[in-house]
Image (cartoon, rainbow, N blue to C red):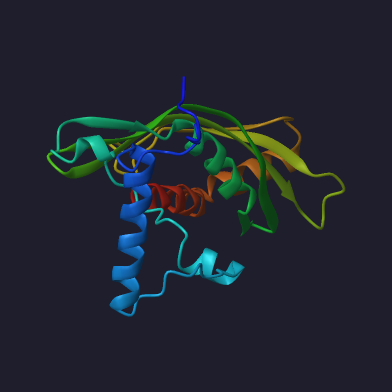
Length: 200
């Protein structure tokens, strides 16, 4: 019970609130004495994007500064990014214009392992990629798939390939041959993803 005339809401000078407020005021005065403005500064959108955006360069977690073993999983990113790259692919071969509308299967994993401060990328996927081939002299487009069963960092580009066409008519067989002859260009699309992955 408070004494008569005493304001019960008055905070004693030794309270945590008082000490904290006093420290803030003293710090502010010291900064102003040194010529440092304590007023809030407006940041426009361009500054936010160009100056304040976090770096996307992959590093180990904050808790792993000692350089112990750590693994980061990028499988979902890879399974999204690989189809995006193939959708941009366009190859001209043997009078056919070849595109890759979708990646029907992208099973596997992509990981980064941090060991003693160094990052080591690794990946291993099985791919089934849909192709479409158009020829001016043919009324219908030809379609099929190309399968790569060992798209991995240990294959060193020596992948296992299989090519299929959805029909066996002459147009489809010619188109499949054109796709088979495009392995070099398909490898460039795979390499585009590898380079992105290794530069995360």
